[in-house]
Length: 115
Length: 111
Image (cartoon, rainbow over all chains, first blue to last red; front, side, top):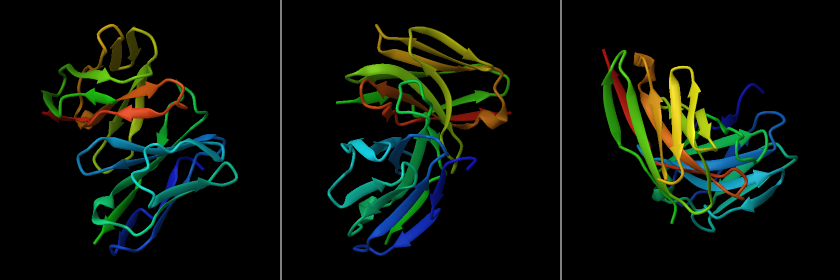
């Protein structure tokens, strides 16, 4: 596709429910990143993939968060038993390769609201 | 820990020049990137400094000094459309291009 696509764009869920957020990276991009942005804040790193493997999961806030990537393309971020503090915009980015000078291309994000 | 400090907000007038500073304390620092984010939009890449010195891209320039753990983004001939948040981000060595972001600087350009 032309850019990174994320779905849904908005998600409202009740506390305790599970949610799945989807990211479709730019075709041919091997690296994929998940970030979280709270209102007026910077971007908090969650996890990145090189191909289908995740060398760095250090940013996942708790074991309620998990992510996978299949076929070196689409990635899903799953949050189990959502809490109100999980409310944020979840941003996905892809880059041509997991390199130092490979710009990240971000999607428009999924705005998650936990009520 | 890993942290980047930048001013929370800056205001300037159309046509002026503005500099947004960024100081960092990160282990495994490899380079400094800058991203722009308009309200409600996706962050977009502006520049990358892997070496000390100035990088120029049109109206935008970015500078890095490793010895001072400091960088800045310089925006010239400001336009109203430059009103946005600007984030510096440290690229971390040997972590797959992972970026650690600052909290962002909100730039308001006034007529």
